Every structure is written in structure tokens, then in C-alpha cells.
Length: 302
Image (cartoon, rainbow, N blue to C red):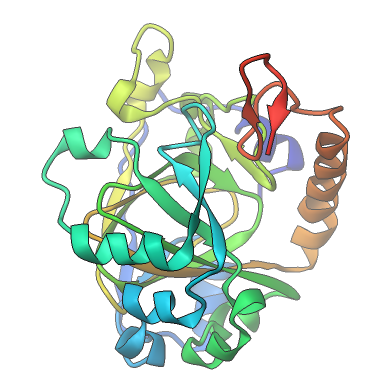
């Protein structure tokens, strides 16, 4: 187990050349096996078959969401706000999602990956559409945790969420489309160069592989990520403290469940809540964060 300080600033040491790790792929898991083999040891796992028959995988689409509440105003991320400048814009939900349906295509190369995409990220789906709760089943994580929160992620090919660690356990389920995920273990944290940019309940990396500066971040050359492609109906358990980077390869709909066990609530959520309160008062992370964009006069704006 890593300490609270390691979660924020990285582990205390790393080997000269990080070994490339593997991630198990299993068709399904019972709760006891998940707890013993993956949750308690903090090991990622891909679960290939447990979500394939979810109602969400059968009926969720951009058109489906557009019709739920066409006039709802949504906030869209523009580009990779974790490593790049924070930028947002607002849109009518139906307009954004209809545009995705019409413009859908797969990522063809690095040039698509580097293009700023508009992304409906971290949609609090069950707060806004509680009738959809029965369409998914995150009972594996719910059995291990005391408090959960759920988010949906809808966007075109090429959306990019850069390297970061979450201070909370996470299961990411791919509903439609395909995503690529890169995983790096906590032991490699010094080579990931934790950033001072503030993000709620997370630690960000300074490094984006597409624009990596070897002189500024030389240790990143030792990092050996595990690369995973998630297909529709597949789930990935990302334990608390693992670095991860996520890119959509096609137009994509995903949903994830974050969950805290008792240690997470006591050690990490309490700290996250304190820092969030200080941030809202402008006393912590006020110069650079993922929740406010800078205006022309260097002030913060939502």
C-alpha cells in the first residue's frame, strides 16, 4: 500500500528501467475472486464478458442520449485539459450528440490524437437520468466500497484524457466504440513527473507522450506502459494510484464507477474534500487547474 504522500508526489524510488507489466484478461469474476486477486492487491484486470448483456450495451447511442433531454445545456472539455490549457464550451446536448453521429470516424494517426476535440466528459449520468441506473451493473465494485459515484463519457474519435492517477478505485466500462488505455504502476511515479496543476481527487502528470520533452522529463524514457484496447462490453478495473491515459479510437460511449473503501474515505476523500474547499476559496491550486479557465486578465473563470 502506498502512503498519502506517495499518492500526491509519487513513490520514493524507481528502478532504472521499469519492467513491462501484464494485465490479466478474464471473462467474468465473482466478488470473492475479484477482492482476493485484484481489488485488495491493487492489480488491474480486464473483464471481457460481464457487461456484454447490459441493457446499456444494447440500447445506448448518441441518438438515444440526444432524445433524453435535447435542450439540456452541457459543458464540453476542449482538448486534453489535464496536460494542456484548460478550456471549455457549452452546447445544447442534442446539437452536440447529433454532430457526433454525423461526423463519426476512427482515429487514423497521431495527428488526430493531437487535435483538440470537444468531449462530454464526467457527465453525472444517474443524477441527471436516474432511470438509466438499471441499465448497468457495477456490483463488483459496489460490494468492495462504501461510497460510489458514476460518470458517463461521450465523444468523437480522438478524445484524450492524459496521464493521471485517481485517489479512488475505478471500473471503466466501454458501452460503444473502442478506447485505448495506457497503464503505469505506482512504482513508476517519479518518472511520471507529478504536476502541480490541480484536479479534484487526482494527481496529474506533466508528461504527454505526443509532446514529451526528453530534456525536461528524462526519466519518462524508463516508463513501460501496459497498453489495452477496450471493446464494447468490456470493463477495466483501474486501482487507486495507477497512472492511466485514455484515448477514444472511434466515437465512443463509456461509463465508469468510482468507489471508496473505508481506507479511501479516511485517507484520500477527506484530503480531497479539504483541498477542494481551499481551491474554491482561491487558496489552493488557484493559478492552474482543470475546473477553471484563465481569462485574458489572468483571472479564473468557470
